[in-house]
Image 1 (tube, rainbow, N blue to C red):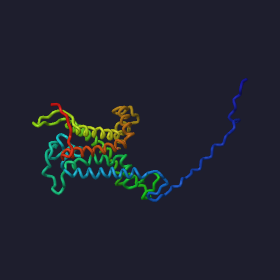
Image 2 (image 1 turned 135 degrees about the vertical axis):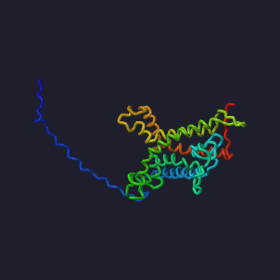
Image 3 (image 1 turned 90 degrees about the vertical axis):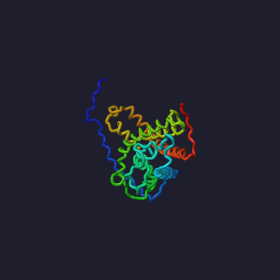
Image 4 (image 1 turned 60 degrees about the horizontal axis):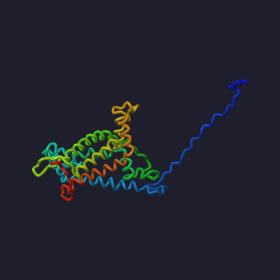
Length: 287
Ligand code: FES
C-alpha cells in the first residue's frame, strides 16, 4: 500500500520549550577558615609550610655559607655553576676585586636566583603556596581572609608571568648540572692523576639531574613551547612524541616538584657533610 507523506501543515506542532529561568546560586561568604568540610583539608597546606618553608630557610642558609660546597670533583647544585669562587670548579677564578665589600660574597648568591625564580613562579607551587602561606583560599570551599579576588593580572602577582623565561634558564642549568655529573665520574689518586670511576656522590648528583629533568620537562611553559602553542601538535618543531612525553611528565608535575626539591637539598647536604668529614663518600675507580 502506498503511503502518502504527511504534509508539514498536518504535523502536530510542539511548543518550543520555554527558556529556563537562570538560577543564581547563593555565594556563601565564609569567614577565614570556616568550612563544612570534615576531612583533614588543612594537612596539605601545613605540609607545604613545613617542607617548602624549610627548603627556603635551608637553601638561604647554605647559599650564604660560601664553604663546604665541593668535595673532590663533586660540586653542590646550589653552587653550580660556580662563576667566581675559591674552588677548582670556578670559571673565572676567585671573588673579583670589584665586588663591593659591604655585600656578602658567595658563589651561590650569583646564580641561585635563576633556579629559585623558576621554582617560585612554577604554576604548581603558586597554587600550593598561595593556599599555604596566605590562605588564598586555604583550601577548596574554605573561607578566605579577604573578600576580593586578587588574581594575577595586576602588580605584584602579574610578575609571575616571567615563569617562561626562568624555564629557558632552567634548561641551561640542566645542561650545566649534567656536566657536573660527568666531572663527578673522575677521581684523583694520591699523585693527582685522574681516574674514571663512580661514587655514591656521583649517583646523588646524577639522580638530582634526573629529578630536575622530570620537573623541568613537565613544566607547563615547556609543554606550551614544544607543542601546546600549535593548532596541530603534529606540526610542532619536535613532533607530537616529544609533546606527549612532556604531557606525561606534566601529569605528575606535583610529584616531580616535591621529589626534585627534596633531592636538590639532599645533594647539597651530601657534598657539605662529605666536605666537613662527617660523611665518607664511597667510590670505585679504574686504575
Ligand atoms: Fe612548574 Fe613550570 S609550571 S616548573
